[in-house]
Length: 155
Image 1 (tube, rainbow, N blue to C red):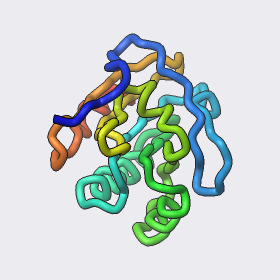
Image 2 (spheres, rainbow, N blue to C red):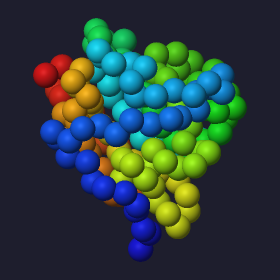
Image 3 (cartoon, rainbow, N blue to C red):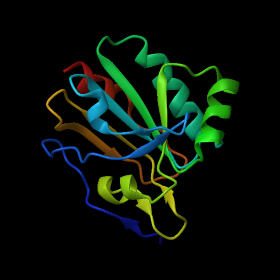
């Protein structure tokens, strides 16, 4: 059994801020997208099949919803994220890395301590900074409920 660290966020909770590394090595915070609805898609690694599909799907969906920003968070290095985005043609999702100190994973309840990866999850954070939707995907090979995330983002 793997140990997941951090609180389990629920709708209504204040979304914890973060400091994550973008593809250009700049540091990004949740507050940088204040005033928008944010879908935070968490994946173990972009270089796996389910994570690839999840990120491509949210890239497609991001184009269809105005005022929604999609952030994909993983432990992948920023260089690997940038390479993957280029190869996959993903240009609407912001990929962010938690590789430095795993503080995102610890604050959002997705850090798998034993292997230092993030558990698959999807959160929707409203313009008010509150979690509207939270899904922790326990089964490794299972994709998240895209429809539920989209409904929360539109709501």
